Length: 471
Ligand code: HEM
Image (cartoon, rainbow, N blue to C red):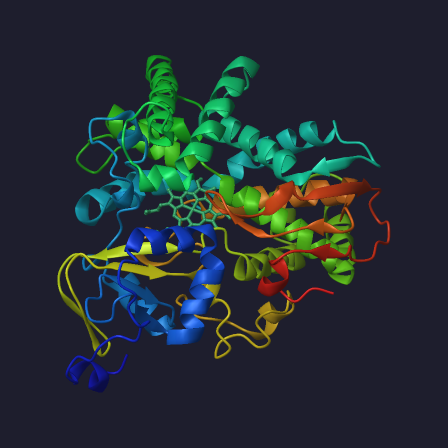
């Protein structure tokens, strides 16, 4: 945004002709159904910045890197408040569980980041590598060549068990099963559009189901936090690091704060989503699949990667980066303006909701050559800026778990691809589905072949073909 542009008198934001009686919740429902498509249409019709109601811009869309830079570099003006629209009662477990970093701003946010960061540095997360490999190998020992595996459930199980071990250090099957069941239920009911539309504690409502499920999850988390404190907290799991984390003035996170942060650190569904998309894209690009399998096998020699080998898998790294470019699990993020502010040539009121989408930004032709092509090789030629490539966000709220996520995804894929060649069941339907993350619909059924089997891309149907050019 140039100074000259900012100095000009404000003009009206681009946007659609207003249709009376179409409120934001109606539009919001359409948007939540398929945010990727909705945002692409908004961008195609109105460009890098626009509003639903140009004369009263309370809902604004920003896709260009210059606007994103503004959002990320002024966190005191563009504040995060992830669950504002759900109107969660402040005294509820639901509130405390969702009261993590993504709800905090300013000093409280900085304090929590300071306390959490040490558990998530690139170096520190390596302590979890063996646990991730061990869980993956155990789960894969139940898979058989020739089987058709519903990849969504299978990968979600690996990631959930990994999180249980690395975040909470729990292995006891009954505790795992209980927490797994509760979290799956919460993700289902919390993502239901009715929870947003009818946020009331009424009999039979999805909102009430979310409230009750959160009470049970919070009770379990508190049990674990108190166990940690009682046994002196010496483990290497994330919860132990958070329980022991001490600020410069000697203060620690309270029980309520720990509940919110531990829950956020536990939800790894973005990793599950990325793994699913990666397997699909590799299936559709057998040459890349062959090269990745060669790389992983020659570096790791049949076993899980060690610390050193994890850093020697450049193609696997590029494949994950390219998957996160084309299909970022969080395709819709939101900030709220804390005061009236100039936004380039436009004026935004206080309290405006600003939507932005890495899904759209990652497809800008000014930045990416042939953006719809899955091309891991582009990462040798193209080096987009922080505001042009942002699957993990940017600025104050950038993903604290990014190193963890990369370690987790690389390890799972390295182990999996040395044991099996998964191939999509031909003629499957693959649509984008917005659950908590952007995932392939219909569970992604894949047949397991021996590693090294030559397969051709499975014919498939569905709107995934609008997101990426497939054979
Ligand atoms: C492929 C995997 C992942 C992706 C794509 C991803 C993406 C993101 C994005 C886009 C944000 C920024 C949200 C915003 O600005 O509103 C974020 C924040 C966050 N992520 Fe991740 N994430 C992933 C995995 C993880 C994992 C495994 C953890 C925990 C270990 C984690 C913990 C967090 C936390 C705590 C925040 C909030 C940071 C803050 O507000 O300061 N993420 N993530």
